[in-house]
Amino acid sequence: MTRSDPPTTRPPSTTRFALNGRAVELQADATMPLLWALRDHLGLKGTKPGCLQGVCGACTVHVDGAPARACQLPLSAVAGRTVTTIEGLPAHTQARLQAGWAAHQALQCGWCQPGQAMTAASLLAQPVAPDAAGVAAAMAGHLCRCGTGHRVVRAVLAALANPAPPARSTR
Image 1 (tube, rainbow, N blue to C red):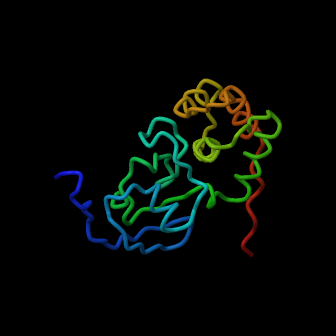
Image 2: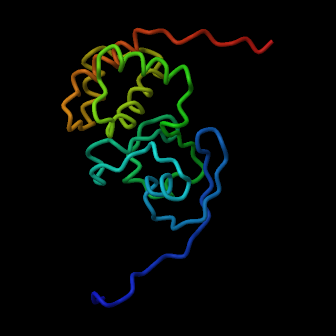
């Protein structure tokens, strides 16, 4: 291939998955990173591009409840699975995280925060809360160019200490 050759494109295929509690059927190149499918095809801009190498964590989403780097996942990898983005976090989870972030002034420029919040939300969902070392280890996979990583760890610990509201009765 020379520089004058047109770029090759793969024919679109249909990928079906659950996204933020809704069924999605997307016609797109199955090798496209989930990050670009979310942002460019589905209009969800909360998941941020960072290093595009899976190192910085800005693009973290949940796949079947576990944190995953959307820049490294081909769209085909989420077929039949459940994806949650920052836009799909439950309100009570968002409230707990926001309270922790505010109390510890963990927010600066905000670019890395959606990915950090997604990892933190996965910690809130664990049946046994991790200790400070566990939180620090989980959050170490995120790079914050503003240098607030230590405050983010304290914010997550505060969110873990803030109990979730009681479940509503369905009666």
